[in-house]
Amino acid sequence: MSLRCKLLTMLKSKKGNALLLATAGAIAATFSVYFFVSLTTLSEDSKQRVAHLYNAYQMGQSLKAKIDGADTNQARLGTANEDDIEAPIDDVFHNGKYISLAVMVKKAVIISADDPTATARAGVDMPYDLENSGVAIKYADADGNPIAPTETGLASDTLVADVQLFVNLAGTPDAASNSPYADGEPFYYILMETSNSGLTTDDITVNLTQFPAGILSTNDGGPQAEVSVVLPQDDEG
Image (tube, rainbow, N blue to C red):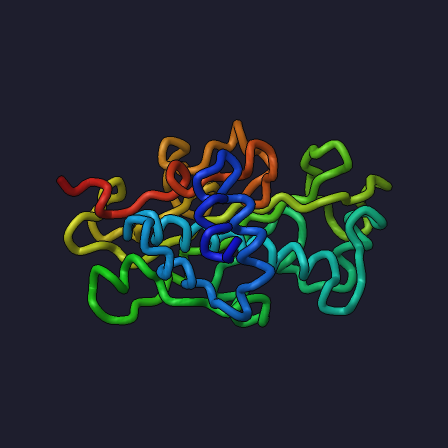
C-alpha cells in the first residue's frame, strides 16, 4: 500500500490522527510539516486542523525530549526525582513552568513554522503568535499523577516517570472572524490551559477529562483534530 493510501486509511480510523502524528514525526524530515496538503481528498479546513494539531504535538514531543535528555543521549524520565531531572536543564523546563514558543525557539528546542490558516486567509506567509503560543509543563509519577513543583533541594524521592504537556497554539487575530475570541485577541487554534492565556475553561478546545495527560495523551487515540482544533472560518456561514 502506498504512503498516501496508508495515511488516508489512518485518518478514517478511530485512532487515525494519533497514528498519523506518530508516522508524521518519523518522516517529517523528508516530507515537512505541511505534507498533509498533498492529501487532496481532505478538505482545506481538515488539512489546517491536522497541521495545527501536528505542530502542537511536535511542541510537546520536543519539550519531552529536552527534559528527558535526548539532546545529550540520556534518558532521565523514570530514573530520577524532580531535583535530579531539573539539575542539568534550564529552569524554563522545570516542573510547573509555562514556556512560550518564542523561548522554545530561542532555546533551540524547536523551529517555528508558518501558520497555515493565517497564511491561507491573508494570502501571505504569516507566523504563529510566538508569545501567546506555549506549553505548560507538569511532571508526573508512574501512576500518571502530577507531581507538585518544589523548590530545589526539597523534592521527594518520587521518580518522575513522564511529563504532561498542555499546549496553547495561537495565531494572529483574524480580521474577518475572530470568534470565539474577542476582536483583536490572539486566535487560539488549540487551547489546553488558561492561566497564561487569560481565557476561561469554557474556551479550552481539547477535552482534558478524556485526555488528562496533555497533548501527548495516547488513550482513545489521543486528541483528534476535528474536535480539538478551532478555526476562524468555523463561525462563518
